[in-house]
Length: 296
Image (tube, rainbow, N blue to C red):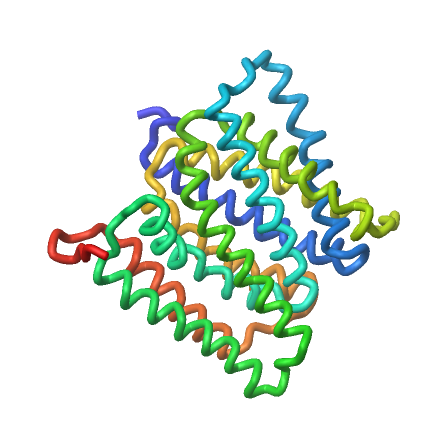
């Protein structure tokens, strides 16, 4: 058996991709605190495009068909606002807490799949949703109990939830996209479309970048390209329900990088809430039994 055909390769690639993107979040938080979330998000996307586009074009690829281009545009637009809202939340919340709250995205995806794809909702998904909701209440309640729920925290939590909603929709798009385009093409359009979409708001939101922000932005762009490539590689070779659990390793990475970069401690409510949310997601993504399906 060759390494490229090993059954664990997609899982390992997705796990590494999540690790790269979690480290990217830490560098992006650094840059966003320096020059604002909007400018940092735009520059990350444009630098990433400048890095990956020449590699893709050097292969002499054919331009994607109209149907594939539509998928690229759709995901690029969604990802642009998903990234902006999440990086904004990082300027207001600890890294691990923001990552923990974002884990509700797979649960939201279940209901989006019902609405958009007419998929059935399993009985286990209902219980999973309750656990996920309870987990978010524990995290938010922990902030309230510690007297740290101020206006900034409210905006940060709201931004995470908005980003999670877009990320849930992203789950629906990425699997179709990975089946019709190679990882280099996906990474190129993902960064390029997202950057161009956000650039239209420059007259209103742009802040002049400082020299100190260049290094974390370049590192963030490199990590984004590498992480996106690995995740696209993985999703092209394994089903989403197999790979989605790798997303939850992001909390471990976020807790580590949050402490290393910003000396952010992980609170007991954040840890407890994460356990509830991840348990809910695990229940929701288990293979369905015939008796578990509910017609909505």
